[in-house]
Amino acid sequence: MNAHAPVTAADCGPDIRVERGQRAVFCGLTGIVWLHRKIQDAFFLVVGSRTCAHLIQSAAGVMIFAEPRFATAIIDERDLAGLADMNEELDRVVTRLIERRPDIKLLFLVGSCPSEVIKLDLSRAALRLSQRLSPAVRVLNYSGSGIETTFTEGEDACLDALVPGLPQVEAASNELLVVGALADVVEDQFGRLFSELGIQARFLPARRSGEMPAVARGTPYLLAQPFLTATARALDERGARRIPAPFPLGAEGTTLWLKAAAEAFGVDPARFEAVTAPGRARADRALERYRERLSGKRVFFFPDSQLEVPLARFLAREVGADLVEVGTPYLHRAHLAAELELLPAGTAIVEGQSLDDGLDRCREARPDLTVCGLGLANPLEAEGLSTKWSIELLFTPIQGYDQAGDLAELFARPLHRRAKLEV
Ligand code: SF4
Image (cartoon, rainbow, N blue to C red; front, side, top):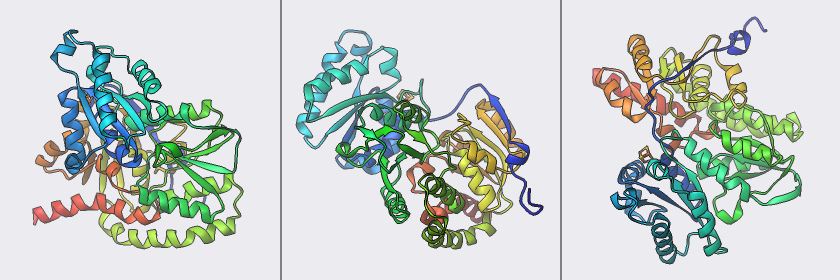
């Protein structure tokens, strides 16, 4: 180890604890809010209750006034009492929807807590409807139920459902598969950078259902999001090969993520340097003013989005924040290995959640900033703590060089607001 290098978790290892208990996290339906914007000819039909409908409509905000690409087929009391044939009703709803919206090419039936409780088999429904509506519309299903999923797992379940239908090609071409929904602006930036590196990148999910990338044995893929456990497993089963890397958050994360791909594709280091230098310089300049505002600030993460570890690494290494505790609902040790190595030595990581214990620790530590779900934010604000809603980190483009400053701003803003309130 270099005498001047900061001590990281790789030197002494992170302090990882597993906790079990009550949790406070949105369900996987929330993913529809960003996924329906991403796949432009897809439609997400939640088979659920009025609660599910309210959740998505309020999470998606003003989108309900446009012609949205999501809806809820409400399971009502008659259905729950077993008086109605749910499959017939579902077929009727889908038929009406497809007649009214011929632009839909891919329909997701999204399971919820109620559909699970009444054991409605959505995979059979998807198969039946797919046979009837093919080739104009493909019908897939996944679960967004709060019994099975936390909110980012909804995206994982959706992409996992797409993997079996990805076109199969004989041999791995020289294409890179980038896996995980990214805002279009971020995807375009990465597409340009990869192309300057001489790498042809394809993205999963694609913007249109007919343009999903092909897979072959040996296809190299790079995860763009840290919560894609099931999707990665499905790709591995099809013979694709994950390129281990940290995640593209901040200047350092983006460089290391791109570098992992560049090395896998044998890109000349000088070319890599030349292609990435302008972006790194822009990100460094953008981060400069946040170092002063965030340096030394004590940050506490409640387990929520599964983005916590990469975000903590970004905050600690790029803007000098102190990590009080990094909670995460699940810790995929292989996918996060490169991230864990970069964390400051002894960083307290808590996998899982015991809500009351977490709240006790947070209240005792009185961090400068608490990153948490919406349900916890208001009570903590009322107790005088500054909070950042973790869900905002999913709705905002934060990956890549040109978003590094925006990412830091998301953390700096609540501190600024509280400082103003205190004045
Ligand atoms: Fe609530 Fe379950 Fe519906 Fe999610 S799926 S909104 S947790 S009832």
